[in-house]
Length: 387
Image (cartoon, rainbow, N blue to C red; front, side):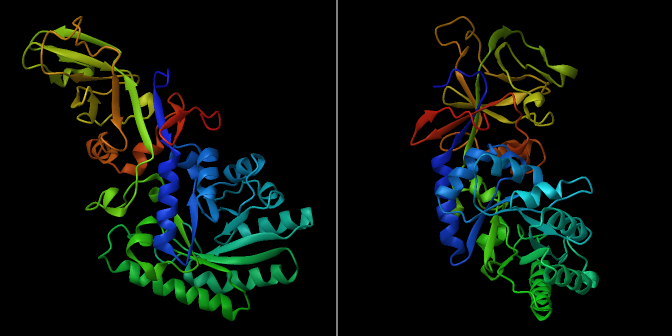
């Protein structure tokens, strides 16, 4: 066991399993492993390396800076970055050979960077098929294609991809996805008619990879799925053949006997109904555990106890429901406390439900003072990368 006080164990074998499984599901389309936001809190560099080892063909990030960091660490695989601001370092993106997503205004900035470096930029044009966030509005698509072709003929850019993003793929029965697929096909056809040789078309996220094979095209962009989590409300990880990658644990840092009526934590929203033993769990919203998630499960000694009272910045409390534990040979002081993870641990979805959010947010927000420990073949191997 690690000596760390707070640990997010990252099972890289589980991650490799998930990549291989997603490759099988998406075949013959290739897999882009999305490692934005420090790989959803799992550690971008170790996850990127493991994903590529398991057969991912591409990596996806939101920001150019994330892609540049991977390049500087020695990652040579294609990396797509798609979310930019007017302050984004497009020169660094082109210099480090990143593929750059273009929704419209960025095109001239990227072309200018390419002209400065005397090196063509690799771009993917993004069409908004209905999500209403990033992406070129359909009525401006022809203009964007025309500008892109002009820059390509000048040797400043090379358009290799057309892509978009789905809005409701996690609800497979909704009709909007059909409309988005049709709009995407039309956008690709328009690009081809404009003289663009489209090498990669990509639309599917994790839920569409599982539920909509008609969305696979040449490449699927999978984020949540590679971390072993399900995007569907009625299916868990095991139902999809996935293994959760992150296990969040600490140790019980204090336990004490309290009388009936004892208020617990700020606001005294919880009072003990009888004399009992309380246990202190030394993680809180400063570590990324949602403040709102009272009732979230904690596994101690083979039993699950819900968090009681308000979660604080550094700690939360569980009620063992019995007396006489503190100071006894059965004291839980120092015992491992698991908040969520794989195998026999509580599922992260239980914490998401307690926090009225989604599993994506729970794992992504786990903070830097929780050490990442990388586990392979059931052997703990601390890895400085991303720790």
